[in-house]
Image 1 (cartoon, helix red, strand yellow):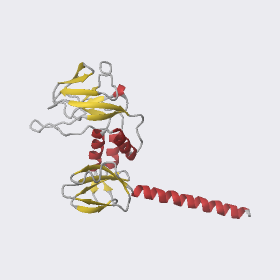
Image 2 (cartoon, helix red, strand yellow):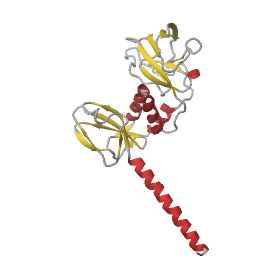
Image 3 (cartoon, one colour):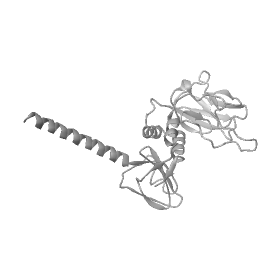
Image 4 (spheres, one colour):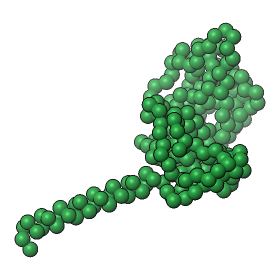
Length: 254
């Protein structure tokens, strides 16, 4: 075989490999995953379900399914039958929203929350600005990136409040001061332990909340990886926070 023949053969193999990679990437991108499922059909399409591009979802009245595809969300509301994949558009804030929610950058600052007028209601359902802040209103399992930098977060900063933390027969009081949304978790007095319950009360909570910490070994660098890991570890409040933020950036459900 001559040198030109070898070169052409290598070129052909390289091109074929490139085509295969593109085809695989296109197939992967076409797949979608259920990241939230509520309503009568929730058991039929549970969170974490992976769907092929040819799959169909038949939803009843009251169903709402949020799918993630190619790093974007798509919300389907019943009744109706829908394809598992479809054209997804996102507004210009989507990329910034995802980056902010996955960021572990500095957030501890005063005047970093929500300002309101004298007659405006407190932002009770406001959302923490990233996934790694512990919104103490949310019970359940919480994935911790670094216990040494774990911050408590609240949606308003109008008053001084005391948060009680009970664990292992011990109680600590944490002061949340006016004009600040944040307070460092008291790791010196109440170290973070994985797999045990912490009972939080006071500080505006209508009822005590139970939080259980789990270790986050590494933060994935993609939203898909983050969703998979949060699901695997059962960190529902953080997953819901991410899905809410992404869903708000949808411009078309498709």
